[in-house]
Length: 604
Image 1 (cartoon, one colour):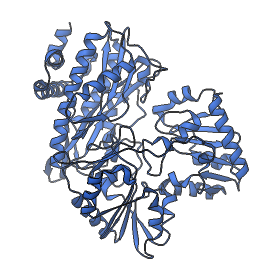
Image 2 (cartoon, rainbow, N blue to C red):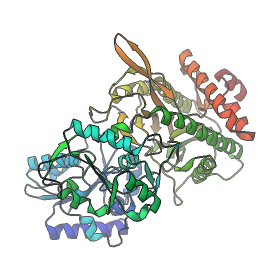
Image 3 (cartoon, rainbow, N blue to C red):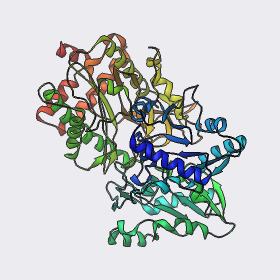
Image 4 (tube, rainbow, N blue to C red):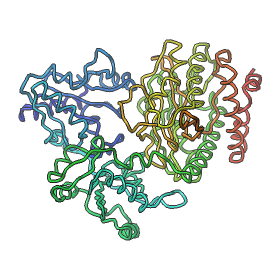
């Protein structure tokens, strides 16, 4: 067993015994319910040693289990080996949910503890109902990790800047008025916003408290006439504080949000999003009536306006040009230089950094050679990474944060000889990606309904993939945002409807453990298509500009319409990127965007 994990679990169990706690649940969460966490709230990773971005750890005196989805099963098995923590494969029929596990394993009257400060009101209800049915006591008032984590990291101390024109295409006052209009529809005098991307968007601010996400720790309380931003004022330059004050935004200490909620007038109404506010914080708002609804900003920011779309298209051109530079280097260097998965990350980030408007990667680059590609969220480290050598497939999933947009792209490239099996899998994934790219569908269609279009060719091989097909993408904001999610596994959500202006990823995949992984990803923009007697219809504009490697294609599997789409896409890539590259990058671009038949002849 890992000594560090062993000692930490022992310390937690000692505290649990002293406090009479039968089981402790440690979610992957923070007070803002973020996907990517500041180090201070990476307690699940600190306690278990599992580094994946999603998972729930449950610890009792005689059991420890880490629930995570199929993206991380292989990684969890590796990282949890010899820790005494069992990988719980969430989503499998024979794997109980954490709620069902607690109901079956804990005796009636036992206490189950979860820190309410990092537990959404929505999740709290599920735990409350499960505990009541099983006769368990739910304690949300303690942070047990805080009692055993002696060197817990401090709060991040990043900086905050204004997102300004021409990149910012909306005004703070316009954003606030849209939020207040939603408040009026709910007859609410107040609205609590804790989601960091919602706050950054609403105030036209960006930060760097969390790697890859241009956000900062804060809460916001919007009233009918007032706005209070709870944030460490030291992060704000003096000129920006003055600018915010002129817009009627009061700056108050980050830690004062609970007291502010406690002082709201009795009988007034507070609009809250139960999926984006923690039950621990909401307990402070004891005197107001709580009315539930989706954060208005969550919907507003998902629908990019025309000016933002223009900026995103330009950003995609710059990102595509950077990728041309990278791939031209890679194809010339592979087999000649020592290249590892870490080298891929360094080179692709450096190429983006030379492009105007680049700020940072939008997530940690996934460069996965052969069997590593079968782990959808694989991450190479200094201690464990592969050398690109021999025959096989290299999967590269990467993205950038630019002042004018956020990118996310996956390409698979061959090294050496490509087998017939690899070509079959690759082409099936490509067929699924093309099918979704060409979709025409009703406006306000539930996003999950599009999922089968991308999976169909992969299902035809008797295969599937565990992750979703598409997620929303922000505008110089988090690379994952909602409300839309193209996944049949997505929770039913009346707000997760496709709408014009939404940017969504298109990333079907196929993973063969121990052998290879394939994923091809572009970003798509939902646009109006037509109006008929049956209503309004949408279609997708492909935003991402980068050649799709044709050396991995089994031509016999593509029909005429799919070949036409591929050639048209490559013609657009060539036309828009050619003016931005030269030398080796231009030569590579021209070679990789030939019509498909010409490309095959060139390879032969």
